[in-house]
Length: 225
Image (cartoon, rainbow, N blue to C red; front, side, top):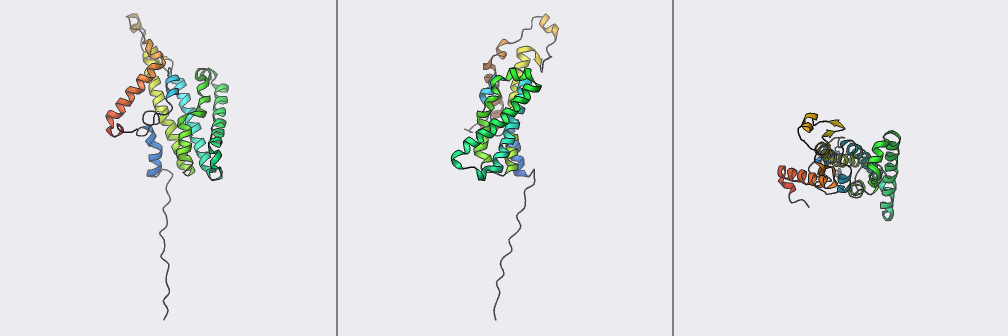
């Protein structure tokens, strides 16, 4: 009497939702716990240079977020067909294309902001945040998580830029987004704007204070290198 062997039925793998717990962590961790500026210490140079006013900081943050998100998506889609020896060149070409598009849109519709940002839009091409996420994440992950990772790191960068810009524009010019916040009577009674806040070192001080505040809230970040 022969006995037939029945192969065990493998349980079906559950598909991750678009905003599963893992994907939410990928999107939201860079906003605070793994912020690219205050934790990873990347992209600090532009944070020092473009945060004297809120408007250019917002535009720079949006530009980097778009470039980071779509370059990560494209790299994740084509990573299997990229020869390992030229992967960095391919990444640079894709980022350069997206940066050029952002730069041309700014020149066409926001020429004054484009002049304020000057070369820093072009330097998104070599921004450590963008290139670092392409190499560390997008080259090994699926397109959707890579897209979320690009958005998360761009927004994390933008939060710091805008926060620093609000502090600097308020104390340095008494304004936010060009609107006068400090009333005229304060100036009439001797109030003077802090000229130091208009200088690049002020951004360094502000970021340092933000890092201190962040680590005081979350001691686990103290030993993060």
